[in-house]
Image (cartoon, rainbow over the protein chains, first blue to last red):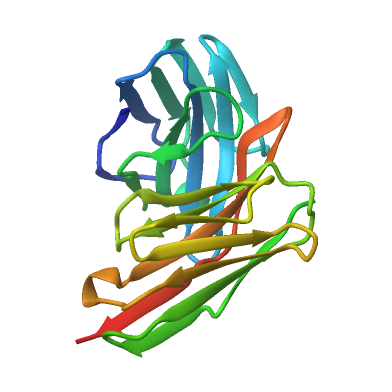
Length: 113
Length: 114
């Protein structure tokens, strides 16, 4: 079964600084990859999804961007962080086509100060 | 736009009780519905996935049912244990061109007392 690695696990960044969160997947190939954010009191929100290398779709307009340079690598970035970017960021993976179980990584806690 | 609601928001029960968590969704055109568990500060663990053509799925002490026509799913936990304490989330997958784009409920925080 697939394993999803996320890093860093925790980080504290000042407003206006850049961000890079990385997600890698093991044990599968050609997965669909997703970035979700869980903010206090707001539940889980889908930010980006990717069906292949270089293919990124954004779900909500925001201060973040995503890239998929390799089949099993998904990166979440920002050039200048805002306070509102604070939250728990989760990478998720789905293989075998639509309708299959989606697996989540352990998440990255981001606090913007 | 799909909306998912979970009731109750929090539940506290003594060990050994059987319990039911409820999930409702506004758009019945779902491809599947998934139940997840989240421990504090951790990622999500998939518990059960029910395809739209199925009525229920079972795994150990967990049983999830799906009624698409009424827009409801329930997660039944038998003989609850303190280790079951966590937040339980349900999520609807619209499938098709929206596959994998899960719409989550706010979760039910479950506490099982020894």
